[in-house]
Length: 188
Image 1 (cartoon, rainbow, N blue to C red):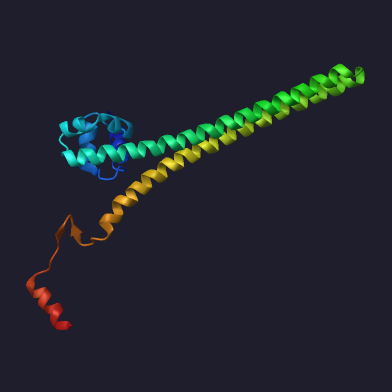
Image 2 (tube, rainbow, N blue to C red):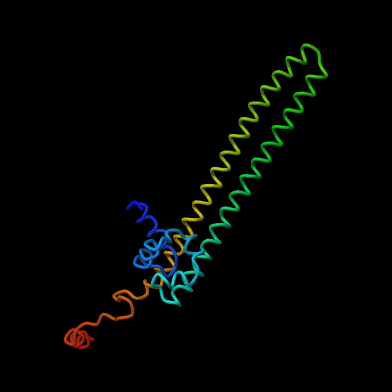
């Protein structure tokens, strides 16, 4: 695995609540380099790579939750894209039918008008397809943004618990010397 790819995998896995850099590296070393792979690994497989039972259980649940959120965002984007495509297709068909009907009912002058209408229909179809691509691109961007927001929310949730314990590492308090405490007490 390339170094950049490995670092990216570690970064993605640390967005899962309860997964730090060391745990993420264990997962990547064991071949679980995506949220999908972690969620499908199972508790026993996670325990087999050196995670405790409790941590494996929490990791499995958190990765399934993130995966569900990602799939939901992707499904919404797909639905929007399909809807835009159907609208574009219906619009193009309607425009084409109108052009054909006008050509049948008229004489030479009407044929010329039909040709113009057909050209307009093609332009409208191109414009509609362009709009559909634009909507699909926006939907894809929103899905990507949703994925990033999920990762950001997971990181924020993870960091929030650590923000309340400034000056602490883990659960061990950093305590000054007795002399420093006496100086502070005497000042008050």
